[in-house]
Length: 115
Length: 108
Image (cartoon, rainbow over all chains, first blue to last red; front, side):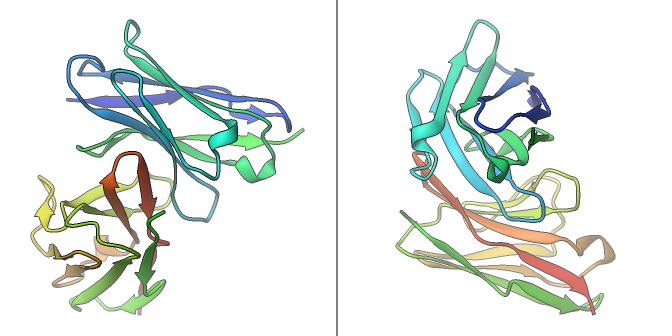
């Protein structure tokens, strides 16, 4: 059974870069032609798509975040990652990773931006 | 960008009620729509994909319909476990995903 697990610092300082990793188990990132993605949810608010990456490495980003986002894949580790630069308090959210098409989500990880 | 407008934002209902939530896309998305249920502190749970396909293990009281720009999620007989927040999501293209604003189903 496919499982995704987000990991990374729970606290990031303003202006720094948020870095998260999604580890995939129960399936290979590179063995099938799926898209993988990151979604976030600020406390008490709705869901926002951050970006998607194809298993081959092609990336697509939310235009509102595009200048600050980088998503990459490491097939050797069966992981994909998110980097969000120049963070502010508005980036405080639960961050989810997911396999698209089958809509399998990780449990989410809360990242707080604060000094 | 495709915008998703979900209504109502809050819905008060009683156990046994039939409940309908609507999602409208700003342009046609064919049937590329999913519905999720989310409870506090939990990840969204997939209920419906491709507008009307029931995810495995989801009770049959949940159903989805629509195509193009108008979609509905219906709960035929609301159960205590169904009080939660529901989101629609379009995936017409994996290069651009968008979610509706959510509908909180509360106890009347």
